[in-house]
Image (cartoon, rainbow, N blue to C red):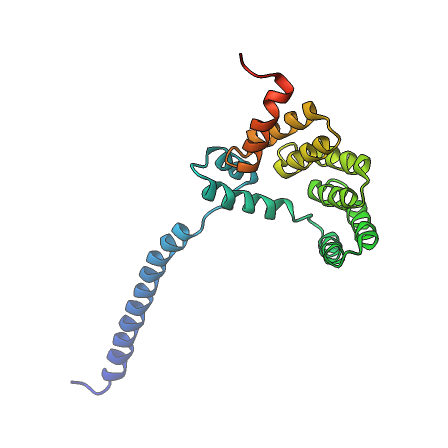
Length: 201
């Protein structure tokens, strides 16, 4: 073989090898891309979660979905408001209710459209025996998020404590319509219905 051709042949062979490797790389990338696409799922919307909650087949499944909804509602969209709410929770655990209320006041002032913030503040006023403010906060929470089943259930308890059984029953039924597998609601409705609507003859 002519020695002068050897470098050219070597370069040509190397070029083929590099092209082959590049082709293999493209093929591997082509295989990897669909796999990545299969793994990438769009986030489940809050609407979907509420639909699944209504359709849940048992209490365990429903509780898991309800927990996901609560986590979504628990995010205000503001890191500062979330931090204030966390500190309010700590203050409540330490039984420093005035501080907890002050912190939640700041949180809802920052995020006035955060339904869960109003619901959490209502819990504090309930513990301070200020049921009027607690009811007002829950009503505001429900204007912002009418599907807030915990707020409906809490409102039912507040009305029941006031001996307003008709409104309590209505609130519990609204909560149950959203969360049919919540056993506490079923029991409350079964107990209140005869008292409010009378017993069947």
